[in-house]
Image (tube, rainbow, N blue to C red; front, side, top):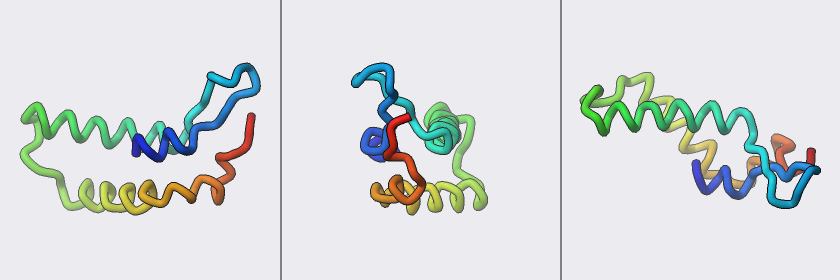
Length: 77
C-alpha cells in the first residue's frame, strides 16, 4: 500500500512538492495500520475471517498500481 500511495499521489497546484493521497487510500491505510498495531502489541492473536478477507481484497486492489488511472487519481487538482 505504501508503494501504491507513492506511485499514485496527486500533485497539488500550489507546489511541485505538495501532494495529496487519494481519500480511499488514506482510509484503507489507516484501517490496515490499526490491525497491524493490534497484532504486534498482542491485542489480537489473529485476524477474524472478515478482517482477513478485507486484507486480501486490499492486497488485490493495491497490488495493481495502474488502477489509479482508472479511478482518475493521476490528474493535478
